[in-house]
Image 1 (spheres, rainbow over the protein chains, first blue to last red):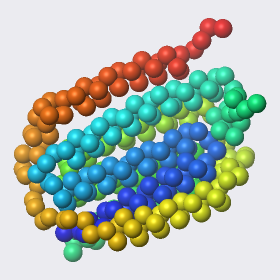
Image 2: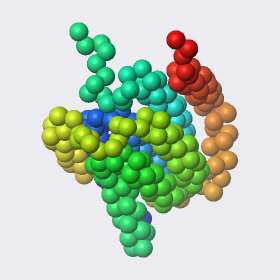
Image 3: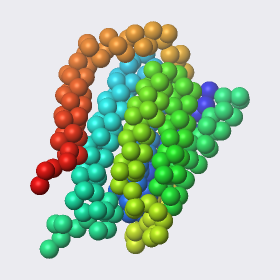
Image 4: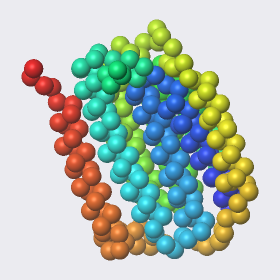
Length: 102
Length: 165
């Protein structure tokens, strides 16, 4: 069987790549893509721990399904916000969205 | 042995696609690489014998979220042509902090801690038990998730609607 630490390594790499995307991109949609990568990394971790520690207990799977649901809701509301913002300001560039700046 | 080779190929594909997502200049190509990465994660779920989660991953992430993202890119066009840099001025610090966090995660969480691993097979009726668990002991989180989805649905329609000003 593949060792558990290999799955944790892949999840850590995905999480770090997503974090880099969130911190470094200027387009808001690209930032959302980074968030989705991070959520995927979390789900890999949850399911790997379920498989390698308690495969007879479905709690890990339930947790992963809830994360999936929240990711779907977050993507829908986030993209609706970007579309509304684009109508208002003609940009989804987070550098230029500074309405609250004094 | 075969499993390990398959795992390495899938994870190389997944992480490589994720790298292209965060570094590619063209936003549309980024979205397509994101789809590839989602498929790789679904393949990892199959390797972990979480078949229901693999199908749900393909349906929800590839089928719904990736399509939504492509729609949003189309509707907010003009920003993605590549005239300006896709990165902001804190990109160097972002890369540095990501690398540091990655090293910490790999060292402490992955290789330093000994996780209590057991070699048990997955019961064949896992999906059945997952279904009864969702309406049994986990019925409150399940219902809250439904209410959250309904709120997100109504909220998204209200927010993205055209206002007559």
